Image (cartoon, rainbow, N blue to C red; front, top):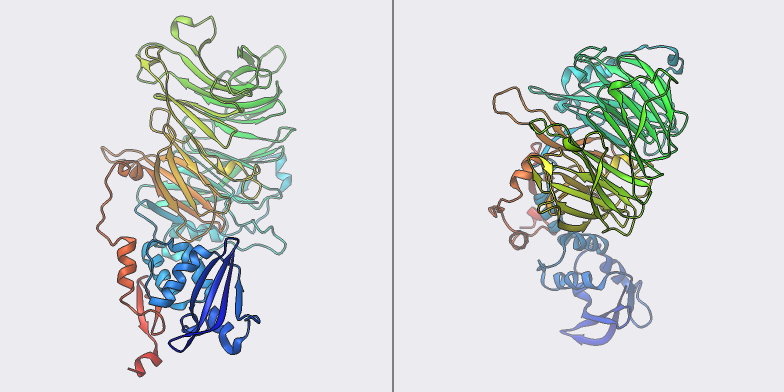
Length: 623
């Protein structure tokens, strides 16, 4: 859109008149005096007004800007008053372009008072980016395990504790030629009170302690390849590696590197394993590390036997784990399962025991899979319920209850509500949720249960339909889509949530109920950096009587930092009426109109972080 101001020979109160014409057609015209436009020194209009420079033969100036935002700016130049109905962010952007210093300072002060580097009430912590590891990974270690000790920098961090003021100045430093996105967080995963954070060529692990908070306890050497998948297992009770050991794995292409971590932060490299095809799924089932590929190959590493085994199966589209079972949704319409507790092998042919559990009636590809097992407090026996989605958009529920054991799962319900392939499905205690490829279109149902088992009376009833629009590319931020999975996140016996980042470089994340789509909260990066990865993790509470686990949202950022948000508090506050104790946006802007921020004051920040108004020396001398 265009703005054109015309100078005419007409005079009002001895001043030449200017007319602003805004295109496209029909043109909008704004008429004002030259003094109104040029009374602010060094503004866009005063620079063009000197000596008539920039004006055409008709006394006009052409400006390609938004006419809707130009109107309140012109009104401010006339009256020095601000129309509070205008979007503050858009108005600030335009005011900066025009160089309207009084308006810019007023709007900046408004934003500073509304935002804080300490975040909102949900902000729970800030973990700065770690030091880039100087030690390189030794590829010769594939022949045997070796010790990965922390270098001096990591030892200092462990002694001081992440999050303390002493280490807030630490930032990533990279060698010449490193990729531009080397410092951004690519992946975040968690298990119990541990989290693993993957960067381009290394990963770090944090552990939460009751008294000292999150501590950086491990950093891998610098790898020769790009990390694409990460898996973490923080509880190996009774395992061969010891009760207090933790395992973390990183994958790139077809290679998987596995470490065993000690509480003191040292790591023992268990080995490097090869799947032979690109790794697209990496996770733990119990103490077994599982790797899958859509090409139809799975790999399993057993912590007891320390044996790595690969197996060719039908091309895999989806997977889920429940108890000791690994279920695979395949391209031929079948659901297969592997009982990893009976691993390692069949004695006859040395293969994994992969068994077909169910085949779709239409033999459509199983593109999404979710398993719901018997609740621990149930006395009605063992059963399994599986919801799955297909390439044709069907959502089906199959069940195997105690009375049907031996006959295989039976088809229970079918929903033909999607016209695009189903990409996600979740069966929980209270809801059935499906997502299709049409801009993450979500359909949800309320699940009725009788004595813990899914029931047909009154059956699953439709609950909501909404979309989780996310304009992230298929490869994700920096080529890693696994770090920006929308969910749903949460335990299956609790309320689950979706995470929505609308545009790729956004610093804002929306948290929404997975059952209804209702917004729970929104979180904004406290340092303004774009969010590149996110994850929800439930961490165990303190050892005190009555303490409960708390749910946290972790956001990884382009500057390498990790920010923590308290979702438990957000869920508790979602139905509370907001307390309007502070000034509204309109009241704040009206108050600022009584203070001249234009030429006589500048904004400064005290050491404690508060803003103060400092008078200019030349302003005070003229009074």
